[in-house]
Amino acid sequence: MSLETSSHRCRNCGISISRTPFLDDPSPYGSFDNHLNTNEPLPEAEATRLRHTILKDMSDEMARLNSEMERVRSLMEEIEKDRELLQARIERYTALISPVRSLPPEILSEIFGWVLSSDGWTSRFLRLNEGQCLLGRICSQWRQVVNSTPRFWTTFNIMYGMGSEAPPSRYCGHFRDR
Picture 1 (cartoon, rainbow, N blue to C red):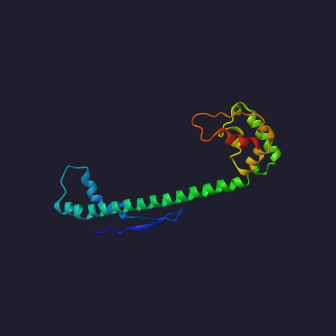
Picture 2 (picture 1 turned 60 degrees about the horizontal axis):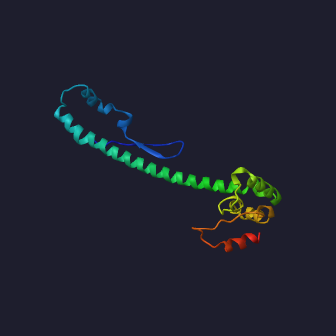
Picture 3 (picture 1 turned 30 degrees about the vertical axis):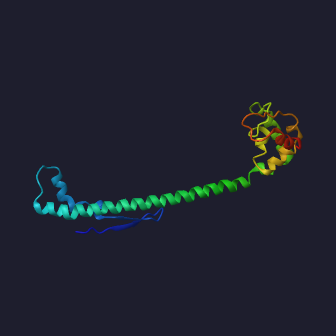
């Protein structure tokens, strides 16, 4: 006895979902349900029918459902990747209309001055990953503002020692030109 499947389409996403009648209507198997509450053995004809037809159909349906679940998982992964790509694009494009992009260099310079004078940024030593060097690595506009603002480069110390990748003269010339 092969079970007929019925197909339903999700009204929200359009995915097709197939169902077998025994999931919707257990009445063809009601006689087996009656035996579940007893310790009586099934008549041989019923046991054979259960073993060779019904359990086989149910196992086939279980395999089909597992396959369907894998297909839906795969589809979900594709949708999630598309969603992440779209979210990244939205964030990049939103940055294009960020108000900070239209600030005049004088205002940026003033803001940077306040940032650099705050407690978190004060350092006697010039470090390439802090302060004005870090601000100058954000974008070309910020680098131009930082490099063209003399007060950011009036006084600083350069530490040179073990682990430095280049001699101080290389950095000194670069910073002297600012």
